[in-house]
Length: 131
Image (cartoon, rainbow, N blue to C red; front, top):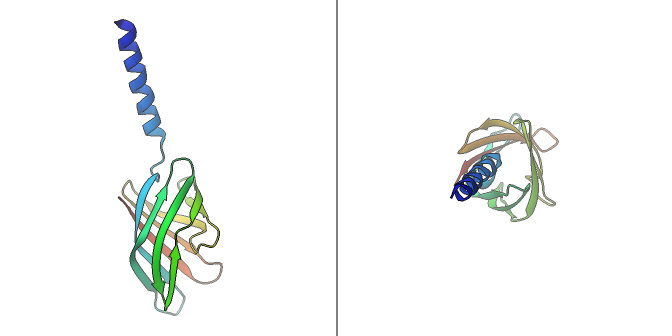
């Protein structure tokens, strides 16, 4: 009887440990807003453009579709991701506008706000909410 209780207790502790170690970013996130901002120009925002799925093993998938300035983008490529010091998220995905290092502006359990640039003067902003 004691061995059954001990085994059950050990199983519960291992489960709690594994769940608590999973990263807060793991899961499905809706892209509520994607904005591009150029100096001296009006910014362009699109809303509810799709989802990011972040797997706890550092991989993921995007399912994004949006139109900016008459150009339609369909980004459904897999990616690799990393979270660095609660300051940066890096997404690596060939052929994707989202493949870059993003600065974490706001990080909550159910919402994220990130900013980045395209290598020139354009600033990009992502607002995500967890599904």
